[in-house]
Image 1 (cartoon, rainbow, N blue to C red):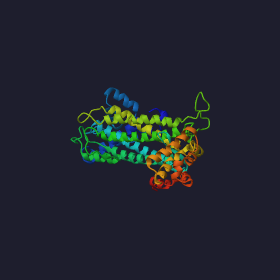
Image 2: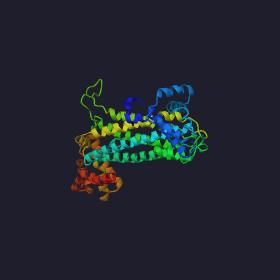
Image 3: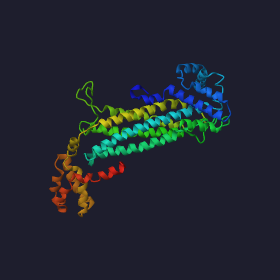
Image 4: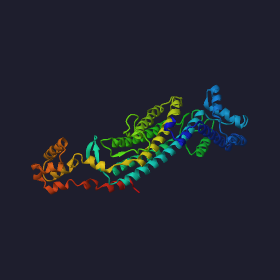
Length: 434
């Protein structure tokens, strides 16, 4: 992933140095377990730990791989250069490359999930703060992009909070799903290595032993993991799209913070563009692009092929680094977002009183008018407001069919804005259970 959309902690997780350090720990812990079983001499297992503080030379490993054409063998050769060829002769005994590669990959995905979970908690805190801040800030709700009925800005933030809270649970599930390791040998039968070695290595790395593996850990786990990342990305886009719409000039109910010295356009100095949320929309697409390849990786030939390998070398870092950046960016946008309550009221009253049409419709039916007739009475007056920007309430008061069923006081009562916000506290109690 390019540095522009990367944050250092997640990038470091996918660095060659981190990968080789995890490979080393897998091999060293496996040697300890084999020594405990009496399979290899204790002194050989202890000798492997001489490389505990070594910073593995990535260039040297690449140099060896250029000859061996095998990354794990290249690493093991380099490890022996530090430990000693005689002392290292039992390293990797009974193991296959996928024992190292797959277990390492799952360690990295698990640690990536930990970072993403913390990112999500930060976003949730920002959404909750803004929801409480604007719990009673009335704005018009829209369906199909058209004015519908009043809601509040706090409910908008609360809705996004609830969605992201579900995503937090999904990320926690994804972490649990992927936190398995396999040290089971060439086709997963433990023919040349005791299952106790797998138990030991997994315990040391914070994983659970894969119940049954072939030469690889089953890829349905990875498909589920990346699918969840895709869902989180879609939720990011959902929030970003709402903010982009709010920032449109003719709406302007909310906007990204525009910092001192920031420029919106190279040609038009007046522009304040929603560049961050537009960027988030694009980043969400990139995260989702990992989902289909991850699902296609599930079907492998027999006990293993490597058609999944090149895919995972790309989607593992790219999807997690991008999502980490996107969650942090969205948190900042929400934290600093500008809200314009006056514009919300102006927009709602652009067609005076029109958004109360359903209340009048229901009142007419409750007064004995058929639903078909009531709809006709209300709609014909609503269309006058659409076409001539007149006042909906005044049109109703001038309609003999309406006033035959409802008194002026009853019509007036139907325009009480508080009617639409009376259950906000109930909804907040459901969303923010604490």
